Length: 240
Image 1 (cartoon, rainbow, N blue to C red):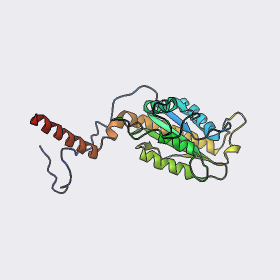
Image 2: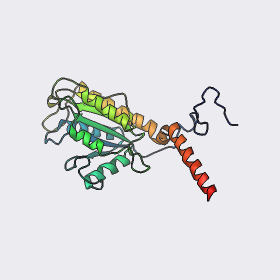
Image 3: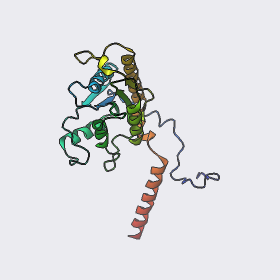
Image 4: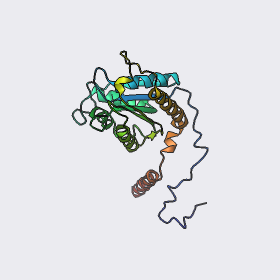
């Protein structure tokens, strides 16, 4: 029976749906969670890269499959066509992933341009495909001085803008030059323990959401537009 919206006169009943608990169960996926990791520095001794390598080791220990994108040779946004090999590699990896980790150094109180450029090359939409919508995200930063949260706060804003499920936990490593040995391995510390926590949470939330991501991101406003487009096509067909 058609539901009447006495108290919601602005609602389109053809596009409105109550959440379906059964739909939130989702299909059973057995492959390892697919996680893409991005870092924001090209230095030879890059602490954001070292932190990402540690994160990848932990993710694999938690049962995930990982890919790390190397931004070396990546052009600036809009300075090359989208079929540039590095841009194609980045976009393919983003499409492959079910979750991501972003780690940036803090430079001048903000994320680096290298970090932002990578995210800018991943658009909100490519045709009908939204490359990041519904994917999980963990944010991290490394600092040369005292602990700060400027870069990860900006990364959180970008994660929301990219329609990602940004997990609550996060990692900010202060005085990063003291936290890694000569081989680039992270030393035992509360900072290391926090990265373990973040990666564990990322895998758990990815496992919870990846199978139902299309349903979680199936929105009323988009269904409303779809019903309008369908009505237009039906009217055109009748006119023909």
